[in-house]
View (cartoon, rainbow, N blue to C red):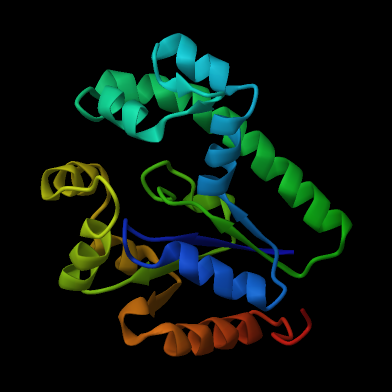
Length: 198
């Protein structure tokens, strides 16, 4: 089974690209979706215990949590110490299930793949990219996002140019959905999987 790591900086089109793999029947595990499930589940109480006041109506208020950790590197490390092991458990269960099903290819959608030292956990790496102006336009359209917040997020992420340099494959998402869909299908075929099997 070939494990393809999918990553890219904020606003580069990673989630959309993951969806294109799923359209072709390739199993995808999203770290972001695993975190979302955690924030709505029983483990949310562990986050609330460290950051009182962020649990509202049974789930973590991401805006409140973001406010609590953004200005403090230690707070962010504390959050990661709770979240990362739980996300890895979900990922391991996904990989076990895919192996048992005989899947030839799976995608691990990991936002901070390089930053978290995960490059050796996958067989190859796909980085999605877009020009800076496109990235900024996409991200600043998100609710509650500001230029200041974007700068803080980018400061914690490896530069896009370095991610592209380390990647095995790169897809530029600025050319539109059809071009990205074609690039994903070509990559799936290159990795030896019939892109129409799903």
